[in-house]
Amino acid sequence: MLGLLLKDIYNIRKQAIWYIAMIVLFCGISVVLKNVAFASTIGILVTISMPLTAIAYEEKDGWQKFVIASGTNVKTIVGEKYLLGVIFALISIIGYSVAFMVVGAEEDRLVEFTAPVCMQLLVLAVVLPLVFKFGVEKGRVYMIIAVVLLMAVLIAVLPVLGNMQEGANVFIGCMAAITVIALCVSFLVSFKIYSKKEF
Amino acid sequence: MLSIKGFTKHYKNFQIEDVSFEVPDGMVVGLIGENGAGKSTIIKSVLGAVRPDCGQILFNGAEIRKAGKGERQKISFVLDDTGLPMELNLVMLDNVLSCIYDKWDCAKFRSLTQNFALPDKKPIKEFSKGMKMKAAIAVALSYDSKLLILDEPTSGLDPVVRDDILEMIYNYNKDGNRSVLLSSHITSDLEKICDYIVYIHEGRIIFNEEKDELLNKYAIYSIDERQLRELEQGAPVRVLRREYGMEVLAKKDKMPQDFEYKPVTLDDIMLFYSKGEEVC
Image 1 (cartoon, rainbow over the protein chains, first blue to last red):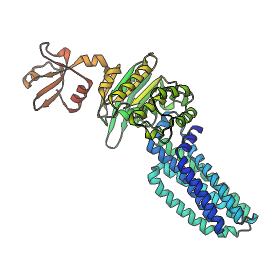
Image 2 (cartoon, rainbow over the protein chains, first blue to last red):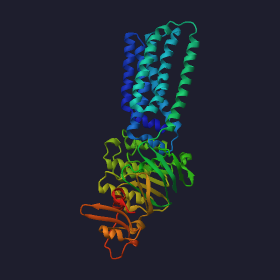
Image 3 (cartoon, rainbow over the protein chains, first blue to last red):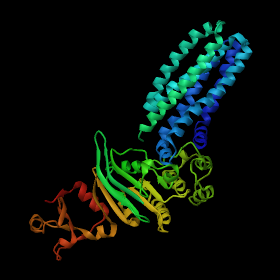
Image 4 (cartoon, rainbow over the protein chains, first blue to last red):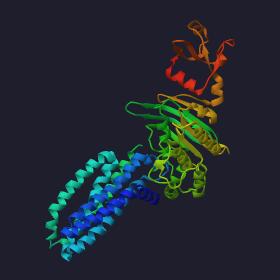
């Protein structure tokens, strides 16, 4: 796993710097405009773009053949892409948290904070199996559709969530549970897809 | 060492049917055939990147598809496109592969890349084709393997680099404990180092023979139609009819002793089988 992760970080290091710069920029915009939607949106984009870019390099280089031939377990190969997505999700969450705190976080707005965080991991859970199945070229189309749909949901739901007072903890718990379950199911689906692939 | 039994794979427009051959311990086996004959599919199946529809692939007597990481890493390989991450330089590659391979030898990798005069800090994507192939060979030789598989390693390279690569293969195999499976359509390379030749044509094995025996067995004869008709049955194998005359690939021991012949090369055999007519 460490070798695969290291390879991806080396491969996407230039893009990663750009995306981290974009996280900083969007968080700055969020602070200036007092609207955390910018910081949460860039989080979604970064979380899926990084694994996708890494897979695109693998497809171009023929690495998938190489790594299978090296005897690396399919679970490790697939799991590493989820880990990569989660790592970049965490980086963007740091930026989002800072923006959220500066803009004005209050205890009763925890739902508003949690929803976009879960959303970006849910997008990862939806997009990765599609990319493993169809490849990056076709997968990007599905990715754009998934991102647009989820962003629309996010924009529509955020104000409602912001005002949610009762049952907030239950809602957060449900969101977190759904996210974890979605990631687990997504991993199993990706594993099945990858196991059947030929290179 | 490696045994392929009844390998069958069907694609939409192409199929490989019932391919069986072995790579004995300490031997170099050359897999020849035209582009698209099925060589790469067979190699990818051995490496686990393609699943056969039928048949078995055994490595040291055990089914390779059930082999664990340790057993799989006893097979080193050089792919036609190398498969290496092109954005990385060799230092990064060393760091990555030392985490992937249980028996990765960093010192050996550095020594090999230095011997090949490969730059450490330059991304692999900026290497020439020959340098990329040398980097892939350095990777393949930097962990403790028993079988080396190379898919078209000399394709598109100049004669000097090709010779360097053949020398590396020879050095890998010279102690007699390690085997090599090498696919190529540059048959002159295979003639230099192979012990056995397996010829695949349109997804089927045409022959699987010891190289020297094979080259001694056949010869090329320039004869006419009347002479062809009078030949012993089974002597002529393939006929190539050209504007300037007719050439026949035939078994030397069944041909009349007074007929003049030209020694055969693997290229000739491939040419006769792919373009020539079968003699009934």
